[in-house]
Image (cartoon, rainbow, N blue to C red):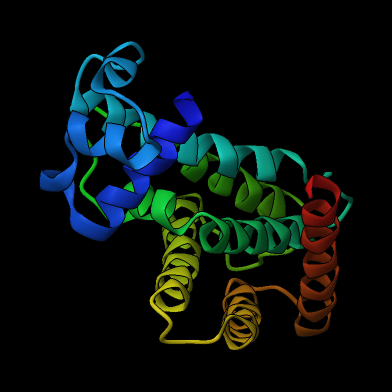
Length: 206
């Protein structure tokens, strides 16, 4: 029941905004009473937080399904593909996670960003990114995040077919990786390996 309420709340928030999210509307969405809503949540703010929490829990579960390999760049690419696939699979949750303004003092997205930073640091430690400087690591993380976020947003909005978006994602990743100092040939192989790893992890979870 809690999952049903969270998913219904995510739909309302994504399609109509926070003003439309009321206990009566939520009860009607799942064909129940407001008593059911308040037996699990004390306020609309708590429901909004639960929507974001559920979204990040699903994303982190997908990322956890990835197995670390001996190629840190491939692992970085795989995480990007999983992020993209997760956004397409949960568009309403994604909007609450990364497009709507988060509640005050909400740091649910911090772990996701720290994962990305850690993946880049592995690439640096392995000597793959010759242009590396410690101060650039969070900058590169922001660049990769922005790339993935933009493509998820465009695909969910039906401005770009998903297969074209995946091609653009790989092409942009290649250009950024080479810009960070990776060997072009190794970067290409890592992208292919990372894409396969993401697909295998998604299949294992389905």
